Length: 252
Length: 75
Length: 161
Image 1 (cartoon, one colour):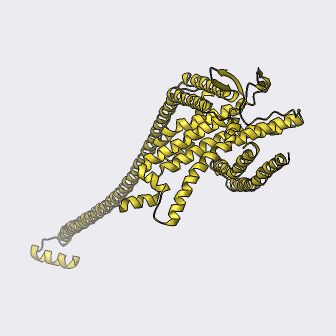
Image 2: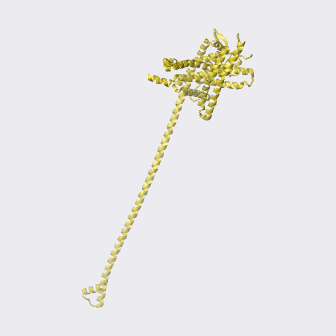
């Protein structure tokens, strides 16, 4: 079979005992590109905008307004915006990089065989898992900061009744399920897109894969959007104090 | 050899059957969102992102199926 | 656990990815988002100020227009009043003058009539006197001798009457 599908990223070389996978290589590559683009934009910013600057500004403004509309507060939005927007941009650039033609043909010959130098960064579970952990841990930190350590633990270990206790335990499961669903959603979509593209290319090299590539472009954007928005929504959920909690506090 | 075959079969069934629910769900979300936009075109800017988020949440089921399939295949 | 291997998870690479992402976040936060958002905020403030100024100017203009209209309508009313008053005064004056003139003409007429009456009376008396003298003279001549003046007078008077 000519298909070459691997769930894990391939190790392309070692620095000392540190293995460099192609996904890691690509994510550094993407980081450099994003940094270059944004620093260039930021440095050239003027009060009277050029056409390109106006475009970037619209992107920023819309993104910021969107963040504000979800989190409902300008100050909070200013705090959370950098993280969410960086996630969005990083994922988007990493996803779009796979659509640059010709890069899939760049291969590297190692002792373990021939392997591609570029791999969709988000088709490596490591990167996605890292970002998911960042957002999930941040959620817990925000929740602890807002509710206090005892309020936070009280949500999971509730001894008011058997049903409340059970629901508290289910909340723990929910937090873990967040990690799985958030990370595997992005990873699964991109990985499946890659596999689909590879299979289509394998079956019919010309024209037939094109619609799937369009679909892939849409997925690239939508998944970046969904990942960052879900992070945003979870954090805003963690940062709001529910009403019955307020009542409880007032009664104490 | 026999066990290997069942493994592949199980993985295919897991993701295939698991995807049915979320596929139907996503279709309903999409159709309802489009209906809403058709009824009230000015709100499309607000509905579209919400639609994507709702779709992402609905997709979770299929994602769990994918995880299970991967576990069966590689675990 | 085999799944973790199959997915290629590796603690070293995870940490490296985390560092990579943190660097990206930090540099962007420091050098891109800060300046861009600040500039957008500044511009937003400026635009809001401009819009506010424009609105202020608009309301001011509307106010001025309103007061202008008010003044104009006031002036018009005033003018109308003045005109009406002037007309009234003129009418009154006209009537007064007319009345006066009528009165005066009446007076003049009356005076003239009185004068005429007086003159007539006087003339009549004069005529009577003269006539009586004339008659006495004529009679004297005719009679040839002077009668008793007293008797004469009596006769004449009785004749004239």
